[in-house]
Image (tube, rainbow over the protein chains, first blue to last red):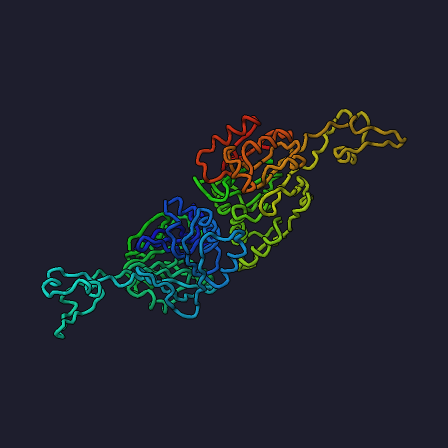
Length: 298
Length: 298
């Protein structure tokens, strides 16, 4: 998976930083996570084709997370898209889009309302599963787990020949099945294959206050994106507005055993972002700023 | 009056050109004409304070003319605006904004529905009058005339002394009144004053097809902005989509006695804009491209 940051600022655009949007590439398809104003221009700027977007996820209905959506959906239609697109968001988003679209879209837009009560699987593609989970913010908000589907096991050619496994059974072997010979002998899968590489996991925690219970969703993520709207000195303000600080995000990463922490959704009150990195790294060393235009390999 | 172009492209953003928005400064207040996606970022880019916006005009409900509006309105509230703001647009715009605003705005937003049947005066400020007029596009659309209020006449000091005009009457003289002496003698205003400079007129013709009847609104404008979505070679396409070409805009300017023609709303199919200028100038020499970031003195 490859993650490109399109926007990393909070409510107000400032210092050439844009409202939230991220693009996750999985198996040559794009998953767009939130879509602040200007997202379609950011895609152009970074040379990312909007045609490759297969799913869009809107975490919540604060404008800095979706005011670029209807423009993007319109443009896709004007550009001639015919391929269907899945859109996940709060129920109210459906009407918000519908009353703004003057023309019918040239492609099927499948709207799926998010569930803010419990964690559920919302996408089960061949290459990736997406699971939404409720976080805690001032309005109903979801985070998302992106988990690669289990990687196929790798055949051992000499073993497959040695045990005379018929070719039609090869795909079952890659999925982990044992082979049973005509005489009832079982050849264990582990004899015939090696494990595939470990599936990767990216977690987008959306806008949320510090909430230790979220650990269950962050556990062992290869990359966790956690918002840090404020520095530690503004903890009171963060709590009031149901946002998180550098220290809180880093503690979540540390306690959840994640491999890398990305931080973003910076308040427009800060011009210089380096204190964000410094504060988070004192607690969780493998932290990076979610800088716009940066692509992270997951 | 000073006009700054914030966006000059048609439906799709392309080649770093943005959807339509223009900022007209009159007497230190801003009038924002249309508000495509990204307008608030364009204001930042050109160092124009959104706090000085007094009125916003949305010509019609195609997204490239208003998808930046709700973001701008939200940001003004987050930035702490308390001063009222007048918004003019199609009736349906009111609901479109209301369902997207999660918080109450921190300032009064006065919504005024446009009239698409006839031309009417919609703003009568001390310094400027704004008149909307219907144009012809695929959905109800208005253009706008911005006309400076009549400039005050200039007192002739030696004449005022010679005829012993009392000081309390000076302001009436600048408004054009004659002076009547105690004995009934009339001193004509023209004896005591010189004409003020001629009020300026800017006309924004919005998205429209070529329509000779619009001449009545363009007449003698100091600057006319007329859309030219297409070059002459794409006239058939322009007519189909109810847009105008370079040649059509230039003919309108020529027939209406305007002093300068600005052209914009360029289709994203064109990367190079120089043919637009060349084509229009063959018919109307004083044509300029409405290039983003350019400010025109009117």
